[in-house]
Image 1 (cartoon, rainbow, N blue to C red):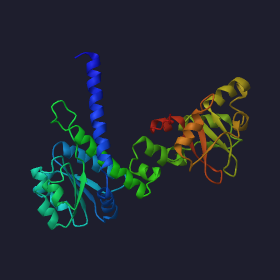
Image 2 (tube, helix red, strand yellow; image 1 turned 60 degrees about the vertical axis):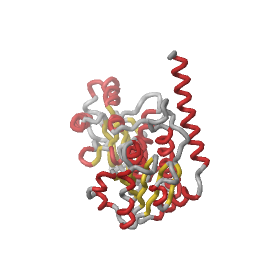
Image 3 (cartoon, rainbow, N blue to C red; image 1 turned 180 degrees about the horizontal axis):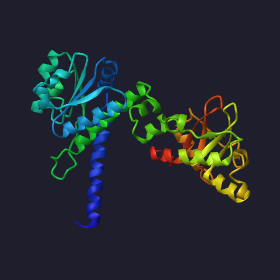
Length: 329
């Protein structure tokens, strides 16, 4: 095959699968609504069952549902037949996935699921199949043909089944009023979770690790505290605890050039940058990162204040980057 032949064939695969997806979409009806309602109203969990490629799809759908806050799990039919069916109760919704609707190990679970009084949903391609006939609800994922060259390998069928699971998950997210913050709670390690969940207070250096000094503190003592904490800066605070200024490593270098031999005896107020930019402990960490980066010269450290403007910590750019925060593009 030439390069053009390969590209042409690949595009044909895309066309066959997208056509199949459109056909299934066009056939959506009240059974989809009933499935959504069943999952939405269940006081229990959603159990996805499938073997082979259908099992892989079932695992993905279960994972997607879990990420939206729905208690969902995958149950392999062989494990179910050997004791794991004990995790299913009458409060649960069980979704059986099978292209033919006749997968033996899945089909054989139906009597036991009936005895448990679980709601059974068949996500299969054949309405006349036993799984579809014996389920409470049949979701039609039938395709006219597979996209593979010999028409046998699961391709179009797995695509539309995956899409059906995505459609269920997305509609349920909307009906349950899921917010980005809710989603982030279930993804604390992901970029979205870090952007929405991490506050400045989670990453700042506070307490004994928050370097501060008074405006009248000699620079000889300031240097000792700067060295002890090794954060690259120290907040200069008034007697009421409010920030008067900041002394960074850069301020020290500039102060040495300007004051010369009198530097060590000078007060902190003579070296500090007065009324510096600061962040609140309750601010989102991502907002602090943007504040520090989006300027002609980066800010490496910032004083952190509480709602009363009292200095409660020091925030470093390094800590924000190390936490995995990145500005959105």
